[in-house]
Amino acid sequence: MQQLTMGQAINQALREEMARDPNVFLAGEGVGTGIHDSPILPTAGLLRDFGPSRVKDTPVSEAAIAGLAVGASVMGLKPVVEIMFNPFFTIASDMIVNHAAKLRYLSGGKSSFPLVVRMKSGGGFSAGCQHSHNLEAWVAHCPGLKVVMPGSPADAKGLLKSAIRDPNPIIFIEDMMLYFVPGPVPEGECLIEIGQADIKRSGSDVTIVTWSKMVGVAVKAAAILSEKGIEAEIVDLRTLAPLDKETLLASVRKTGRLVVVHEATRTGGFAGEISAIVAEEAFGCLKAPFKRVTGPDIPVPFSPPLEKFYIPGEDGVVRTVMELF
Image 1 (cartoon, rainbow, N blue to C red):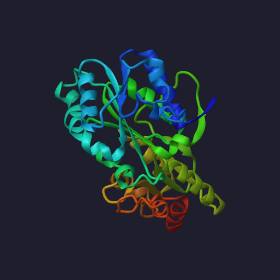
Image 2: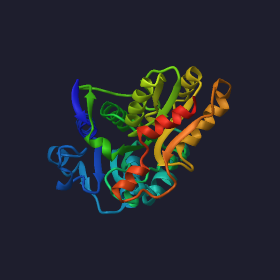
Image 3: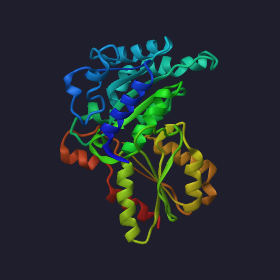
């Protein structure tokens, strides 16, 4: 077992898949220039090691990057393209939503269209509202797209390798703050099934469902709750589409209480979908109303103190769980 940050784990996954399959190539803003050569960043050193034919720097046009990915996929290649920040997905959404997501359906399932779109998300860097908003619920709403949001280096490596080998278009969303967080990562071949949630902590009193950076927040909150005599079970969804309803419902039926935590704004957030599933399929098992801990319905602030207020923390999770008791 090796210790890697999430940025390094993603770099290792890209490196291994490019070495394994000559059809895999990278494209995006800055991936072929020195701005991404910091050893902590996902594409560091890949231009040097694989050359400009497989690591393509692009113009500053998310629409063009997405169009490149769709065209290359149709022609039998396996593009891994980077849309630098999650909100920029809105510029690329025509090619991704109206073409990539629908091509396999339009072929009657006879053709494969493998492509991975990597995007940075999340606050914490004072990058401003144009760069920090989490839009995973938008993407998960689009049939034909798989949506992956890892919360640890090991999950990032295993899920990205599986995403590159998948015959469908996949949106792979990476929280920027996690690039610098180390964790254990298996060496060599490491694949994690897309659509399989993970129990990050077992508990009997309340289920906390979350993903991406909020997994770490939930773990800290669970430690505080344990000191108060409340044992929380943490379900890390890892992928929002396809959604592992079985693991989610099994945990809620065991604990009888549900709190969903995500950084994205509250209205229309994916917590609403999870709550609806529980209400439809496990309502009789609930001992208390389900709760949500989310970002507020405002643009992500630039000011560091305001941004800290915006991002949910363990204290807010603890307060919300205590309300259920």
